[in-house]
Image 1: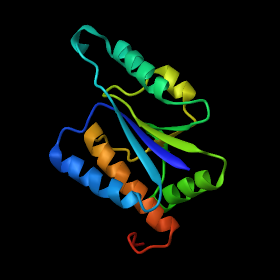
Image 2: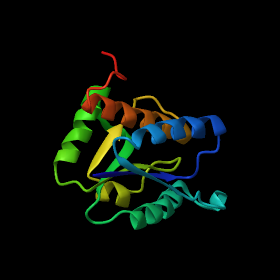
Image 3: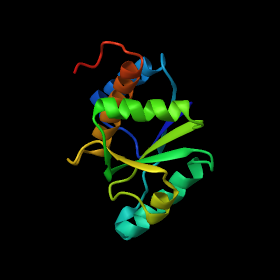
Length: 157
């Protein structure tokens, strides 16, 4: 199984990039992880929120295939603790999922077309975080999940 993290926009703050890079490097021992940063939309002041979501949806949907298992990181998604998330990842790895694609959308969320394509929705928290912070939190949780799956001592209960 391969995991792809698909994001709208780039991580601008160096300290967040450093944290993400730290966990991406650690994840190489467990899984093939691709991070695809889609470009932020330009001249958005002339666009409504729905128009922005629609344009972002076009970019997102071009990057996923029919066989990808698409998971939106969405505030309305299922909430897992770290052990439950590890179990979720493990079950996807055991099943026929070839590419597990996690998607972090733009500032206004996802267009209806992206929700229709998604297989699952997961929430990292009920709180709202910046899109940059979500990337860091997600990569850390992904690393944590693999250490839990492998029975390694990173996670404490």
